Image (cartoon, rainbow, N blue to C red; front, top):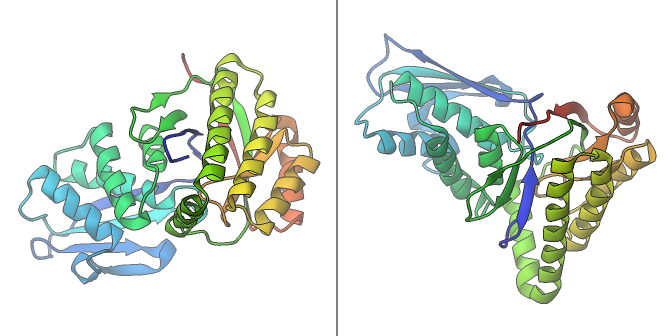
Length: 298
């Protein structure tokens, strides 16, 4: 959530981005070759446009570390995270690339530095992102987040089982965020009320996560999805999958990320995760992920 309200995010460990860096002893100094077979990209850094996220990321890193020129190297990028689906694929690649590159040149960045640089890339690529994706991915822990304020690592007293369903509709974050901003500017009173409603849900959810009884999160997820529908960020495909998950026995379900496509998430008991996943597949989900959020130490 943005506009000064809190949000809760959890890492999804079943999908991830990996970046491997190898020296290129035959290449001239400064040549960076990029191979990202998952998106059909094989090129040199110098051939990418100035606004390309990878080019921006490497420029920011070089400036941060005070490096005049990188040694010749090859960067291999592999990601199992769906693109434009509300799961932070771009932020995950940024975090992985920053860690791999900084370690390769002998100046590994700490989490705070990685998070900050990844957010700068997110801003350039998405316009006005909340910063929650790069934060939860960098620290790999459930977080309670308010834009512009220090985030809070959440205590999760009982593990959570989530079923994630991909609607198959691409949802670029910049477009979704821009749409909400335009509607907020046109009717700020109504949207401020919706934002306040979501903030109250986040506060209640934080208390439940800490105290246990994860099934009590279900109705809050349902209420959150209803508020997001009122904001105009859901879609018929997402609504169908959300309702399907509930009918299949999920405690609650909602859209994920910026909405207008991408993924939805359902909170379920571990015993029925397969049942809910099967129902989502029959309802048209293009990809399904079953993941667990582990309990954490207070």
